[in-house]
Length: 387
Image (cartoon, rainbow, N blue to C red; front, side):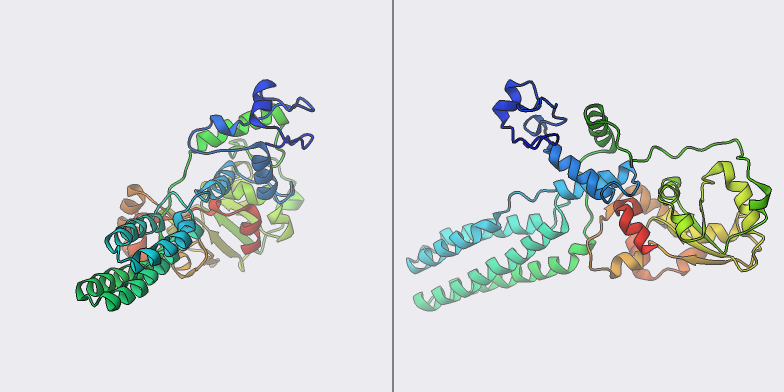
C-alpha cells in the first residue's frame, strides 16, 4: 500500500514491522486492509474517494454521499467465474469429442447457476450483474451448439432434446436478466456508522476534511436580516424534502449562482425561514421547484406545498416537480442505487387517493414493492448539474 504522504510503497511486512507507519516518512496509515472483514480499504483508495466526491476539494458533500460512493466502488468486482469461460469452452469441446457428455453438462449446469445467481445479487453492482447475464447467454450458446453437434455425431435424440431445452432456457434467463438489471434492488455493504468510524480515523491521522458537511444545524433563534434586503423577493424557490439536501445546495452557493431561495420542507434553515417566506409571498409570479427522493414521502412533497398553510395554500405560485419520480427511475437506462424496505412499501400503500390517481399503474407498483432511491446516492456535482 502506497503512503499518501510520500508515495512510498509499503508491503505488509514493512507496515507490520513499523507499527502501521510508512517505512520512509513514518506517516501512520489510517487503514490496514488485511485486518478488515467485509470490505478492504486502503489509504490511497479513501483519499481518491474524498477527492472525487468533492470534485478535487471544490464542492461540499454529505457523509451519506460518501457512503454511496464508497459502496459503489467496493462492490464485488474482483472475482467472477466469467474468466472460466474460455478454458471451460475448450474442455467442453474435448469432452464432447470424446463423448463424455455428463461431465460437461453437469459443469455447464453449475456455471449457469453461478451466473444466474450473480446476475440477481444485491451485493454487486449493475455492471457486474450485466456481465454475468451476458456470460449466461454465451455459456448456453456454447452448450446449445456443442450439444447439437454432439447429438448429430452420436445420433442421440435424448442428448439433442436435453441440450436444446437447457440451452434455450438459460439464453432466455440471461436475456430476461439483462432487461431487468437497471431495476434490481441493492443492499448497502456497510452502515453509516462504519463510514463515520472511517472518517474519524482518517481525520485523526490526516487532519480535517474541509468539504464534508456536518448534520444540518437547526437554529431556533431568528437571524437578524437587514430591512433593505427583506424589501426584495425571489423569482424562484427550490424546496428540498430534507434538510441535508438544502444544506448541501446552500453550502455550494447554488442560491447565489442561480438567483433563487433554498428551503427544506422541514423548515431549514430555521433561523431565516419565516423571513424568507415573507419575501417569497411578495412575488405574485413566484415559481417553486420541488426536489426530492424517489419514495412515498418525496412523491407527496408537491401536494404538501400546495395544501399546507405554512407554504402555498391559496397561493398563485407555480409549483413544479423536478423529481426524483418513479417514472424517471423506470425510464432511465443508467444504473441507479435502488433499495427496498417494508416501511417504504407500507407508506406507498397509504398515499392519498388524489396522489395515487396522478401516478401510473407501473409507478404505483414500483412504490408499493417498497423500492426507493435517495438523492444522496448521487454526487454533489451531478445533483447541481441536473438542478
